Image 1 (cartoon, rainbow, N blue to C red):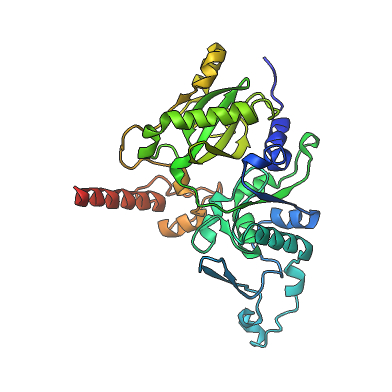
Image 2: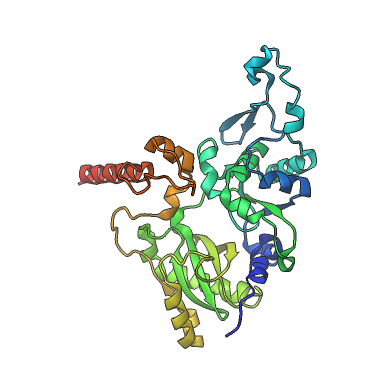
Length: 358
């Protein structure tokens, strides 16, 4: 049995290492290297925005949408103990960082992508921090959105940690041209021994009526992309890739990630089962990978990603408890858990809506 070199696999899945190979088959992206001083700033826990994030900034997106950001370092919000003259104690300039070159690179990248971009670090998007932005979205329109998401995201902080020499290829911020993607058009594909084994809806277990109707076309389009563009080009033997299929005969590569438990969610499948199937798979079966989807509407299904974005102190506040030394709320698991209550409310509302429709 071969021993996996996870660090080399992670390196292959970094967008900076595969973007040029599949540039014609993926979304336009800008890759911004992270300098050492910015990296130090991003690793710190304190959420202080750089000086380049102006006091009040209105951003026009071209769609009539405007955002306004405010900087707590503005004189009118200075410490009242200083007498209200805005002079403070003179330490603000030392505490508030400035990264003019990096901020300018981010601004130019967002502008080149049309003013709206999807943000991620080398491997993860800050989906656990979208609560911090206006509209709770991962669409960034200016550098304030970028800094807020990167600083508040534990997933991105993990990407910015020290790396081994095997994977020491620098740190990057990735900005992709923003697209409104229908959740029923995203799919996750599992590759074992360079063979496409299985396909799952990316937003499992959501029900989408068109999937059953277009099942054959979806599989054929994904298989064609894999065999013509990916199979003999991507360097790994085992991996997972996500795609977006906006229309027939049009499949767009979204991302690559590591194969296996603890690396990528298996969604509609189980990795043990996939490994068993891979051991007996034949060449002929590659043209017909197993495709699992919900054939019928089973009502609301629990989706793990829906509970991202509730900070622990926010949960503790609503539970009226303090976290223990281990960082876990002593009341966790009780019926008044905020997230559970919100999910229950959503379920009740959906049930009422269904009853009204009937």
